[in-house]
Amino acid sequence: MNRRGFLAACAGLAAGTLLPGRVAFAAAGAGLRIQRLAWAGLRLQLPGATLFIDPLVDPAAWGSALKDRLVPVDDAVGDAYVLVTHIHPDHFDARAAADALRRGGVLIHPAGTNPLPVPPHARARPAALWEPQLLGDFTATAVPAMDGYGDPQVSWVVSAGGRRIFHGGDTLWHGYWWRIGRQFGPFDAAFLPVNGAHFGWRKPVSGQPGVLTPEQAVAAADILGARRLVPIHYGISGMDDYVEAGHSIERLRAAARAKSVTIQPMAPGEWMDWDAG
Image 1 (cartoon, rainbow, N blue to C red):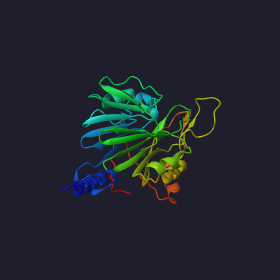
Image 2: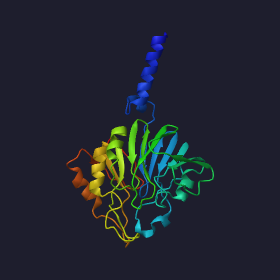
Image 3: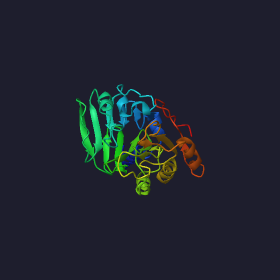
Image 4: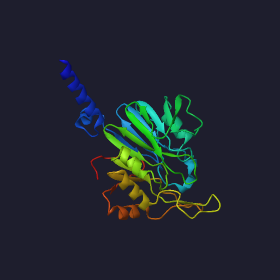
């Protein structure tokens, strides 16, 4: 092969790598599968690697108030990674992190936070905003989020297997949606909190939602250019100081009627079918 032919071949390979959704990914059997875990947790699965976001297995995090099935995460395939959005115990569950990384791996957390304990066989790595983390066949980028208490928090943009997803943690509404959408969108799916919860633990009580409401989640998904919105971070009941907005799924569907966003609820343990919606 002459030099021109070699360069042309290299250009073709680069294009196949950079353009999401190309047939080359399917032909290689490297398609991304996603499983919803309890509460805000996700498992992103490639044939030789597993990435978890905010896995939760400890029933003590919410007690009987959370009715979600707690999906085990001790069966990671291949290289293992855990991303956390922030270190509140319902998002950084040390037991879940230890299970997911029991054979080693990497725990990636927002810069300025210190999740402890780090699993014995794992390495911890801080992630600064807007800086891509190259994690084998996954690329994960921490982007701005706003916590209802003002604690450090990020959302995650993850690309793998020709797909790009957004995970919102438990963010509330903020002004970064447009920048994130312009820089990373469109998304195959946005996993967004939807329970619009009001907190009573901090005084004086604000009376304002500390998490995205269903209507705000739809607006965020639309700005991000998300093809579908998968609701997470909802289903708490029976608590005096943590009260969710009612009828979250019905409100999501009503708000989405005027948008080009498909609402796709998933039960804990369910896997995403990319052909749906």
